[in-house]
Image 1 (cartoon, helix red, strand yellow):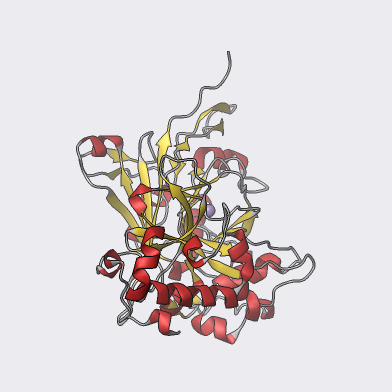
Image 2: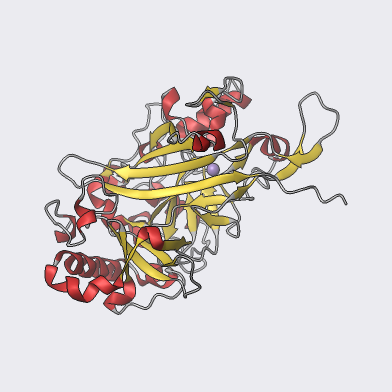
Length: 425
Ligand code: MN
């Protein structure tokens, strides 16, 4: 850690110093924005309190995405973080920089990076166990789970920034007793509470990433909601895994929280049970085992159309943590590249749903309602098994530790829009 993590540091942007601010000067996450209601070219910025500082203020030309900054690597990120930290704490720089600030509420936030490739892992062991139990009561976790980071390749084209509506997908579904499937709107639309890893410098094709170097390839992390149509998934997933049940939309938060900002919140890797094997050598590094985890608290909130009409605030459905990830960020990156597959700046790796061990900490509706059997009741009296049209799902995240300034992730929000017509005319 360095001067940028000093908990005593204050910014001349007063809103950044409020105890509840998600973006104090110790955070400094990167995003892409433009003034709302304009067609100005999108550009890179850093969140500070309730403002965005245009990176052009420091002479940095980013263009409409941060892939160039992601590719620049740890040395460059550290230098920029120091420069930003000094600029935003030194009152003498206020006069020069103030005209490069825009209130966040007047900004349109866009996807921070152009995402070339997206994979989604399955590292939340309690989620994997809960879902496995619904399908295979005798053997919830298949034997490979403890050894190999499970994942699938998703679609990058349908990843959207928080605030973008999520259109309910149509698809094939089949009730267990029905003789044939039908095509229509999903009736079991769900969210998945995840973390997204944003890749920095890539690796060349055929050159794996050793675990000791894995974090040099990580620019930062975002909140990630892997929307899932459970009824489509149930019918299509065997034998090749998720396909159209997942690829209709994935929501990420607009701000990339850097690994530098997360440094004070590092913790030990997931503690394995006595019957779980040690990672194979290529996934095992002493420093990673000791401090490769990150204590990130994650929450999902829901606000229905009826709740909005009655001015009721969003209701928290669940509260979990990235600590429930069976694999560390470094292990996920190293495994993804272990066959020689090349990662490129801006690629996105999802963690998988991060459920805790209690009923209040599970990361999806299918777990909250035990497969749709036990509806949850919302403030105002409505009940839910899965998501309804008009429901707004709000993901939040934060890191807090005694002696450190709390940092936040902002929000990743999506409101469900009704399915398009079936186009039979
Ligand atoms: Mn997922």
